[in-house]
Length: 399
Image 1 (tube, rainbow, N blue to C red):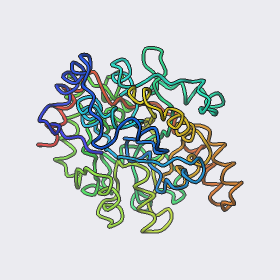
Image 2 (cartoon, rainbow, N blue to C red):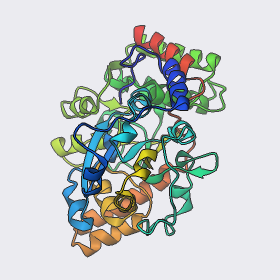
Image 3 (cartoon, rainbow, N blue to C red):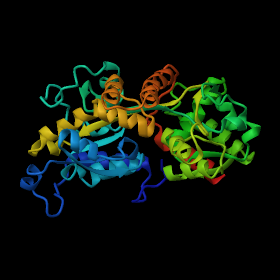
Image 4 (tube, rainbow, N blue to C red):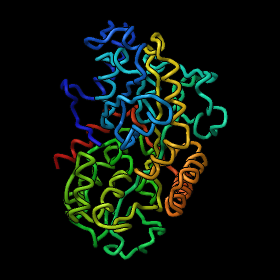
């Protein structure tokens, strides 16, 4: 994840969100992609999607072979400022059909008219009714009692680690306290922490709250005094030499593990999977934790402008694909993420001759995420106290 204090236009996230909401309220002029008109769009079986990299399959041709649609996927990172600028300021709804992003954007982009409400009885959305409410009615898909998204994936983020370094069981079933990450002597100087304040400050706050060192209601939305306490603690740990580096990109997570430059990283789970592809199975473990997780979910949201085009059926066919077994199975196999209707993923794997090991891993993915979601703590990509959190985080970066 990347989360610089200033976005590309030099605005803080707080200033940016305020300005883009004003622009959104006034309405933006439509600007179609050069060379592409409505007729050309209607004639295409391609659906254009702008979203976070974690929702991608490594090979979208599987989808084309199964439902006849082509995916035009433009990836973005998990920076809410960049995402909001692109959707609102650059009017991406005129060139993109679907957006996938962390929960939180629906509270802004739904009521402002950039996301269309989901047509739950659309003929192509055949799996909607059987999708559990725990997924489809999740807060990260709804705003003002309206449904603005279809669930795609979710997980509980924590940290990766080498079990032999910290004396943990190599089977990965131990619950590792965040105390090891922040204060463990065995890993001092070899911990990498994410530059995203949304994630790192919230995880730190949750750790401090759990151990009675911080009094705050929501670790993901820190008022001034709490944000200052969290930053003070992080500065202390930085000056104590706990952190080897503050990383920015997914590729850095993989490299730090693969080259054994860091022993613990508060990373995305796919980074552990990619590192193990290079180092060998279960060399790096993605943690079950004592204190809880950065719980998140991605939703697929239809651009309001797309509802005026002639490929709405194709859009809903793709939304339905995200709820189906093929996407579920490959997403879990390639990235380790669960989502709605995991049973369909298992069924797909069984019907397509996957190995017993792969099928067992799919079942384990469902169990793993259920275990994580029993713990407290969730993320918030647009905290009310974003400004002060960002300012305190900058103090940590500069320390």
